Amino acid sequence: MTEKFGARIVSILGSILIIVSIVGSSYASKLDFLFLTHGVLTGIGSSFAFTPGMIMISQYFTTQRSLATGIVMSGGAAGALVQTRLHQYLIRTVGWRQSMRIFAGIMGISVVAGFAYKPLNPPGHSRSVVENLSTSPIKGFIVDLGLWKDRVFLIWVFANGLAKFGFFIPYVHLINHGVQLGIPFELATNIMLVLGMSSFISRIIFGRICNSSRINRLYINQGSVFTVGLLYLLIPLFKTFGSLVAFGLFLGIADAGNYILLPVLTFDLMGSERMAVAWGFMLTVNSISCYGPPFAGWMYDMYGSYNLGFIVAGALNVASVFVLALIPWAKRSSMQNRKSILSVSMNETTHEIKPWIDNNTMEYYVFFFYSYRDREQHNMYNMSQGQTFSNQNCKWIP
Image (tube, rainbow, N blue to C red; front, side):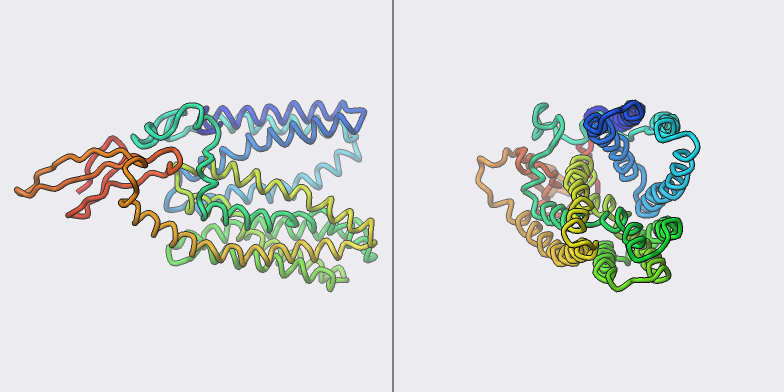
């Protein structure tokens, strides 16, 4: 929808939907109604409000994309710090229904902020001749299913799905785990405060570090995911308030490296023209994280401890690191396939050969327009000089 209608409309629509759902939830008298309002509608609205922001960063920032993403992502960590305390205060003073209406009013800021989104390319604007020829209105309305034939994308999505399943288990159950160990509830909440502050600062720092061209962002991401997994596996060994605070501190640091690089690496791997759809698919797969905390709760009901849930979460994060290691192989394989593209049968491509005379030398340029199945754009192939071709407005670049 962001590609079709633009980031501004989608983000404003999402913010309004969140406001309506939160206000509706404040009048709920049954749990079933909350499933619809605070569950389904808020989830849809949040997706509409969040997704365009990441896409706009990829459009507006090139040399400072990682830093910009880190700054934007740190806002979420800062908001979580304030929201937890504010929500507890409001519930004690005015009740949960009125507190939700107050938060709905605060969400009005997101509606105003949505007007600041000004896409570099107008909604529905075609950025290339190839895209015009290869995308029908029906196929290009919402999704590009051709992404699921890309090995790099499949590995990237699968690895993140593994890691995200258990990602929120400590975030949801760590306080209760601390209470179970004998730590007072009010004191245990400070663990999450330390985690949030650490994540807030670290996201900006990692954003600055990952701007460097000498840094391999994929390796940074793998290291962060591995560290998160290792920390989760070690939670059963942390039995005191001090050790859990240290856990929260290091988790915030490790989490930051992975969190800010999700949209950045999606852009790096998929390119600008497929970023919107790829990021939408990525968020869809990552929604599997919603099932992690209930799974850990089920484990607690069965065994009386959250430790097994923490161990499963850590094991899945470590396993995802090995899956991520396949991405360089998939990229090399994809490049080899593209080099052999000249030998594909004529019914896979249409072509036109045009002469261009330069210094009395006849050169031939082959224009390849690929089908929807191979939607990714390809540069012009120069058979003699190796010159490049800009796909915008069909201009030669010497």
